[in-house]
Length: 113
Image (cartoon, rainbow, N blue to C red; front, side, top):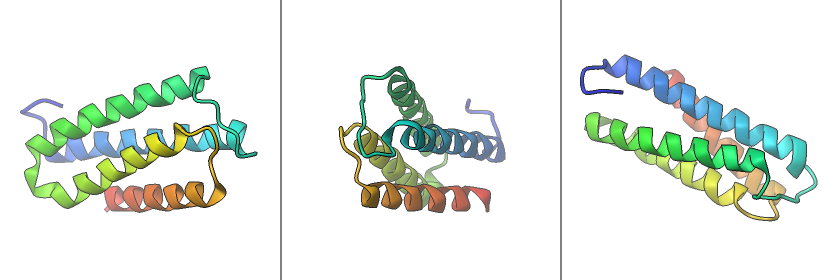
């Protein structure tokens, strides 16, 4: 994103990043965490953390550039924080995962509008 990109372009990129974050975290849960045990030291967790950092950096730029989208950016920041919190724990409860999944689904629906 730069200062000259269109808002639609920035939103499309934000949507893509949020979807990628969802797919990455969801696959980690399905592949390794389905039994509730999580190991934040695995390579795919490191990749998830790098993706979270990238999405966060993009969000900061988006938030500065599109100040009128404060409601959306606040919800996406909550989604990013929640993803980091849940997937950084050693044990992920099913209820926490379902709550995270609902937050992510809500964000993706908003970005599709």
